[in-house]
Length: 307
Image (tube, helix red, strand yellow):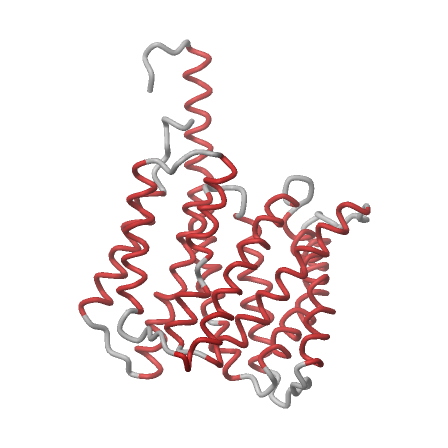
């Protein structure tokens, strides 16, 4: 703390640091839990007996009415939308629909490791967007954390990551999903400034329904499932709980920490592979997870200089 500050300035700095710590206290657990739920989504997509885009459609269609009910139960009812707000929600819904369609298709067209690494490119795209908007370079600690996280992510999935013409279409789809999910989060962060998290998520989710339905029909996929269990689990865990926690946290903590927390998903996928498919961990896997965890610890520290 700067000793040259007056009592009021020191009090304001203490309030900023205390507010940052309060957001971290609730924000980091919410982010971790949200990413745990989202990481299970790829498993439910593979278990579904519909097409991949159709699974995304049902994820949205089943979740939408419950999200509006939750918003009302939380005394945060969805208000009527003006023209500009409607356009913003329509755009965010379209971005989310493209993200889900590309991600679900990519899972079936590339290796799971490729899908995890490229699909979570939001981990680095979102901080880069924040730095571009702020027109400043990352701090030394942020740069170190981003570097450690990148090395950790490559080590974690490096053994099974494979660039080949066979995987090219799936890799491109997963990377496209990461780009559109970043755009979706940016738009949702802007909408959060004038509306609570549940109506924001409810409206954006509803706006994704028709684009996904049209894409599923255009792809000629099987639409109606025979086994509803994976679809219901996908809607409940990935959309209601997972996305709900994401929208609750977005804008409350730094974009660097928010983005890097997405790397929890490849870590969870590695454990799923170990448990379900007997994919043993090697030294590189453990080192990768350690580096990602260290990066999250570094960026979770309050930045008093910025405050």
